[in-house]
Image (tube, rainbow, N blue to C red):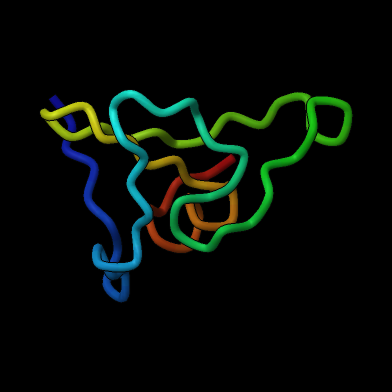
Length: 72
């Protein structure tokens, strides 16, 4: 199993967690950037993390690259 960890400089206190009963967001849970429309970026897939209690955070492409080291 691979463990995904944020890079240095990531601040968990800045993450805006969505409640278990909330609809998915249209913004990055870290930087608040609006997610692109399907027409603008058809291949966009947010990184979504959940807590064991069901709280969710979604990250835009820029935050995935900068804070999680993911490559689009």
